[in-house]
Image 1 (cartoon, rainbow, N blue to C red):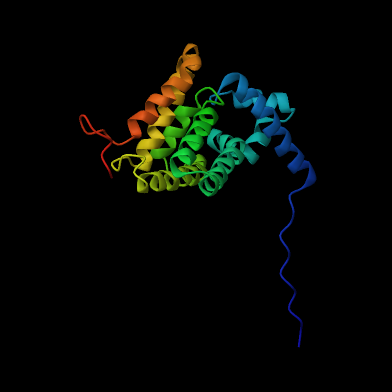
Image 2: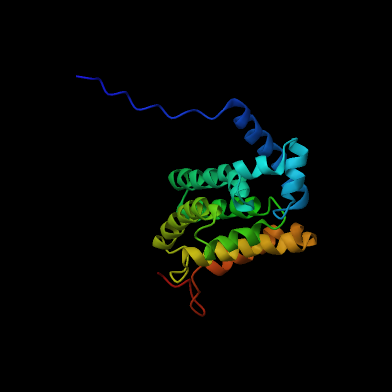
Amino acid sequence: MPVEPSPAAPRAPRADGQRNRDRLLEVAAEVVAEQGVQASLRDVARRAGVGLGTLYRHFPNRDALLEALLHRRFTHLAGRADALAAEAPPERALTDWLYEFTLGAGAYQGLPSALMATLRDPQSPLHASCLTMRQAGGRLLAAAQETGAVRPDVAALDLFALVNALSWITDQAPSLAERREHLFRLVMDGLRPEKAEGGPAKKV
């Protein structure tokens, strides 16, 4: 009885292909830091010493390149949400996480707008990794709401929009960057339950 051949093991990426991809990401981080998320892909390929076709083989569009650049950042923020939930009271965990998020969202010029665009484009490569990060923040929000620290009518999407808007403001007007912490505190104050007139905050 003939012996059936074993299925071929998946081939590892060619070494030169992996080097090209790593080099493209290294250069893309520099170019995007200089030019923002609308950076020229042609500039990325040129500085990396490869053709534009090679760039598109690894990253078929701009969002795919951005996702590769930001995936580690999004994954880190999702992990930070779990770590903060385990080590800090709910309100403190949410506050610390949101502040880290606002700093990260301002890492590249134009990034806040790109993150908001993922909400209306589920097919974007950025959508899935951004969704995982938003869901992690949503768990922190729910925990803070359970303790009465955050008003119950705030949804996770509201929270994402608010803190992303804060990053957008400082992205559009760098002169306001020094006011970031003050603006952030104003946002956090708005999340707290309303106080009854002449009395303590309403219990949730």
